[in-house]
Length: 368
Image (cartoon, rainbow, N blue to C red; front, side, top):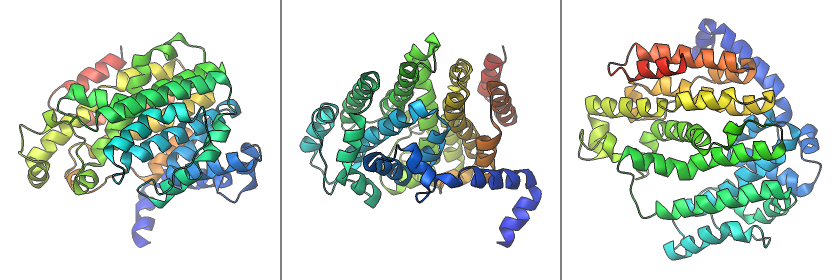
C-alpha cells in the first residue's frame, strides 16, 4: 500500500486516468444491468458477454469501444476463435482426433449446435466449451455477411494450427507465418467485419497485408513478453534465428544475460518493424469508435515493447506496463494525431538506446 501511494505521488496524472477509467467502465461488471441491455436481454447472448470477460478481460473491455452494430459480431468472432484455440491448446486430446476437430470446426458451427465436455486447460475455457451451443446459436443469428467472414477465418486458422502442430518456428519468415495464422487472420477478419458493417469504407481495409501486420504486431509483443512463462511450460515461440547463434538452448539463453538481452532486443526491433503499417491502417479508419477499438491495443503493445527492450527481467518473469499507462490510453486517446504522436514519442526514447540504427529507420519511415 505504501509503495502504491509513493508511486502515484510521482504519477498523479495516471492516478486520475485510473479513477476515470474505473468510473467509465463500472457498468461492465457482470452484475450490471447495462451490459444485459447491450446483449439484447437474451440468455444466450448474455452468456457470451459474460464468457468473454472470463476468457479475455482486456478484450471484453476494449470491445465496448465499438459501435452497437459491431459489438455482437466481434464478440462472437472472438469466442468462436477462442473455442478453436481451446481445442488446439488441450494437450489431452489425441493428435489425430484433434486434427479432425480443428479442420471440421468451421463447418460444424454452421450446421449444428454442439458442446464439448472436458476440453480446455482452465476452468473458464472448459466452461466455454461446455456451453458452446449458446455461442453457436448467437453466431447463427448474425447476418450472412458476418458469418461468411467468421467461417472463412476460422477454417484458415484451423489449417494453420494443424500445420504448426508439426513444424517449428525456425526463421523470422516462419515467425511471420505462424503469427499470421494465430493473429494476422484475426486482423484480416476484423477488417472484413468493419467493411461488412459499412461503418468503414476505406479500400485499404481490404488490403490483407496491412490488416495482417496489425495482428503480427500484437502477437509478437505477447510472445516476447511471455518468454519466461512459456519456457517454464516447455513452449518455444521465439524464432530460432533470434537465439540459436547466441546459445544452445533457451535455458542457456535465459542464464546468460548478455546473450539473452541481445536476442530480446533483436525480436523487439523485429516487432517494431510493423509500426509503419499499423499507423497506415489506423489512419484510414473513419469511425471514431472503430478507431479507438483498434488503436488502444496497438498503443498498449508499443508501450509494452518499450518496457521489454533491454530489460533483463523479461528473461525471468512477465513484464507489463503500468495500469496507469493503460488507463491513459483508454481515456485520452481519441484520434489518429494523438496516437501517432505517442508512437513517435516511444520510438524516440527507444532510438536513443538502439545501436543498430533500425529504430531510426522506422522513425524516418513514419515521419515522411
